[in-house]
Each structure stands twice: as C-alpha cells, then as structure tokens.
Length: 383
Image (cartoon, rainbow, N blue to C red; front, side):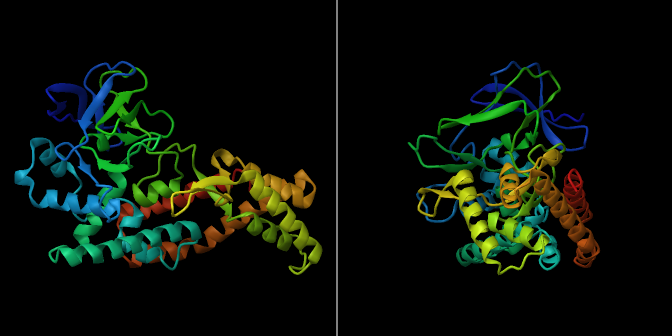
C-alpha cells in the first residue's frame, strides 16, 4: 500500500484518513488508526474555502455552475488555499474523462450501434447537455475549449454530493468536497456514510474500522449502466444491477400477444390488455416530482429482471393476469430473456467494430465488454 504523507486536517483537527492505493491499484482513502462506529472520518465547511459549491439563486443549472467554478480553480491554482490547491492538483488531468457518457469517441461509436435503447438514450441525452452547456459557457468565455469543458463535466458528474434538507427548509445544493470524493464505492459493505446540516459536511464511520482498512461510501443503489456511463466502472458485486425486459405494461402485453400468435387487432385481447394495464398502473405507480416540483403518481419506468435473476413482481402480475397461468407467465419471461440475449449476441461484432473504428480507449472497450457480459449472465439466470 502506497501512503501519501499528507493527512486531512480541518480547523486544526487531524482526521484519521490518508490517501493510498488499494489491492486493485485504485486510489482510495484509508484509516490511519482504528476508528470507532459514529466517529467523524472527515469534516469540511460548506463554503468557498473548503468546497466547490453551486448557488441555487443563479439561473444556470448546477452542473454548469460547478463546471465553471472548477475551471476557474484550475486556471489560477497559485491563488488557492493549500486545501483547494491540493484538491485541484489531485484531480484526474484533462482528457482523462470518466464514464462512457463523458467520452466523445465512445458516444460516437455507440450512437448507431448500441442495442440497449434506454442506455443509449441516457448517453445521448447527456452528450446533448454537454454540447448545449458548452455553447452557453463558451459564449461567456472565448478561451474555453470543448476538451476543457468535457473534462469539467466528467469531474462534476462523478464527484458531486447532493446536499438537501428533507424538510425543505433550505434549497438543495451540490458540492464537490475535497477528500470526500476519494472514498471509493461499495454496493454491499460501505463502512461510512455522510451527512450535512447545510453548513458542515461530515463523513462518519457506520461501524468499527481497523487501521489500514479502506474507507468506502455508497454512491447510490444504481444498476451497472449508471456506473458505467457516469463513473467509469461497474461495481462487483452489485446487488442493485438489473436488466430492463420491457419499457412498460403495454409493451409487455403487446409482446406477449405476439408471442401467442394472436392478431394485434383482436378486440378481446385489446380490452383485456387495457384492463390489466390499468390495474398494474394503479397498483405499482410511484410518486415523482414533475417539472414544477409537484409530486405526481406515474407508472414504473420499466419492467426488470434483477440481480440473481429476481423477476419484477409487477411483470409476473401482468403476464399471470394475461395468461391465467403462473407457469405460462414464467415461461414467457424465460422466452423474453432468451430473446434479449439473442439480440445482444447478434449485435456484439458490430459494436466491437465501431469501438475499434473510433479508436475508443482499451479501458472503455473492456468496460463495455464487462457490462455486456454481466448483463447476459444476469439474463441466463432465467433464460
């Protein structure tokens, strides 16, 4: 393990954290001594001297604000405090983009070849956001380059904490916290968690931690796709991984009707599908904020096969209702999983060739391969 000599210190308090390299060759944060459950591992004030913050009073989107502030810091390192200077200098350098969605070559290679419709839409939406935000920022700063902005967006979207008050007493803010973003992700055994009162950001141990042990946080209960697109890795293991089998209830029942060889204009099937979808949406709707911030009941955004082949309860309900037989419903799910595998296998060569043609980095090529292999492995649990 390669230790750095510098240790986190805030307000004269030395915290039990130091930067090192883990067994996988990845930089991380480690305990300099035994840490007890509930003890603070790192604490920062939420101000310009200790963090890169957005301002909710500004009209610009938070990611634009943070990207703009980060670029200003990198251009004037000599004027920064020792903390912020060390933070900026330890960030990955320009052109070291993180995540496939941040990498122009990967986006162009996958634009016309990726067989994962939802992942491709998410990737392309983000690519458009980078282009549109660059146009706005470069209009105010004619020295800004797209490479510089793409790098800043990669940093912002992989290193930002969302600071919010669950009671709505203060506006939600985003912050990049020196030292905090060095904690790597764990999907199953994160030994730290973070909290904030709006003025201070604190990382605390959630269990006893031994000296030399790596500190870890959870970056959220996300599937492999999210980590690959925005963080540039896929966690192993990932109990939150899942594969979308259908976009919604109607999609599932239309597919099942075709599987059964029933005419798509059959009136009886049409009435039954509408009844079942209405029941499904009423039972499984979820509340989400609309564009005005009001919570609305909306249908689930897909029907999934989860980690270890766990089938979405809602999908079983749909197909069971339509077929009238649970065994037939399970058989249909197996058929759908096999169909998705066949689709993926039929497009693999085309995707790999596109990645080569665009000279995508070996790391990102390997990342895409791992993502697809894990997706197929999950589907084979039921196929």
